[in-house]
Image (cartoon, rainbow, N blue to C red; front, side, top):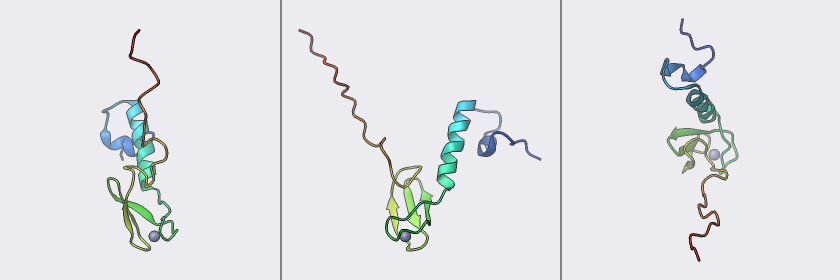
Length: 89
Ligand SMILES: [Zn+2]
C-alpha cells in the first residue's frame, strides 16, 4: 500500500521537493489529463499527445498549443516595459 493519500500524483516524487511544488504539479497534471474541446469539430476529445502537441480523437486534427492546455489564455505575451524611464535628466 502506497502512502499517497494527500499528495496524489505528486506521490511519485517521494519525500522530495516542497509542498508548493507538489501542489503546482498536481494542478498541472489535472489540466493535462482533462479533455479539451476541439476547435475543428467541437468535440470534447482533444488530448495531449506530447508537450504542446494536442490531438483530437474524433477528427484527428493535430495542433500545437500551450504546454499544459491547448490554448494559451493570457500569459503568452508579457510586456516588460513597465513604463519606467531609464533616462535621468
Ligand atoms: Zn476534432
